[in-house]
Length: 578
Image (cartoon, rainbow, N blue to C red):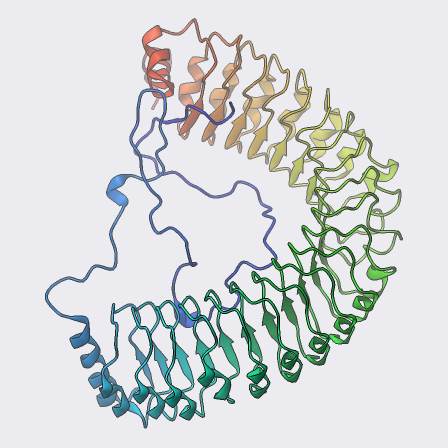
């Protein structure tokens, strides 16, 4: 079991939780694109406490020292929040300030004195409180341009807010609205409206009143359909209706000709209207996690499209000449669909592409010549398919920095791998590989090499040339010995060699001064560990579960990784080395 029985045995060292991979496959939308800077808050639902834990002899999950955990948000002294609010209002009046920030003050109401700022206030921030509404006096703030009410418990708004004729930004995210308050439809000066994460199920036809809207976020509600009135919002640049229950998009969406971002991921869409072809300014189109089986042919008219995300639908083919027409398309996410053939037909169709993700499909073959004319492609993810071989022109994929071929049926990695000298991340996990080509030594920029779940019996000694390597994973193979040249990988931070047939660990491992994590668990023939392991001063996590280690003192083995390291450190020829 690869990740069991871990122990932190240098308690003075802080864990670094960073991802060791230089490539992270991002979500199409990270969920904060509609967040204005004025919120100055962590991502919603982001844990503010990394947690902590104690250590037993063999199992420790220590991420953060208990002493580091702090409770925030508690008020000190006897000063009440209402008094604090009144003082802030008074000070704003005296200073003739155009901005009033009453956020995170634990208030459930706002003093009527707010109306005294009617002639000056332009920005009012009330987020992260306990408000269920705002006082009708708020409607007297005739110069107000920004009203931030997110992260409260608001269920309604007073009709007097319709007097806010200058209001341009209204933020109602993370509240308890079951419907869009009627007064919102009367705020015709609005340019930005955030309604994310409420319980809204219906959007009224009165939406057509908001002709000045450029940004509309309806994300994470319970909306089943968008009204045809959406077509009246011709100034709209961004529409986010993701994470709802939409079954269709109205044909009138085609009237929103200035849209640059349309996000409808995580809905129940089964088809798209042909009018999407009118969205010629569209740059980002998010369609992940729907029920689409095809795209309308008219999508090829969206000539400014740069990002297209279609993950987790049921698409079997793309419109003819999609890539040929959309020459600005640089990122395509096609994973988790029903493709049986490579979704690119012409060799020059990927010439403008930066990244292509087609993992979790049923593709059996990569056509010859498809990637040889795509020097701009830096990331190709085609894991979890049915590839048994790679094309003869494999060595021409010279622009790649990330190549993920994991979970296929590859038995041989071509020697031409040596030509992909820009590779930084190479994933070959869960294939049928029995050996690696010596040409792998040419990948001097490689930082991540994933080889777990194959049939490797050894590693080529040339692996020692991969001096930039930070992560090496050979877990779950048939390896009996690790090459002595391993000690030359001075950048290595993570080494996984568990679930193999290792007889010993080379003494050269002591040269790995940057090694932080070592997994050698479940090697049934591993009887000893070298004293040199104690020289790895940055080592913080080690797994030895399932290894007999019969040549080590019983008390050290029973004490777990920490005791083993202490034994190697103080009962060895290197005990004087610090």
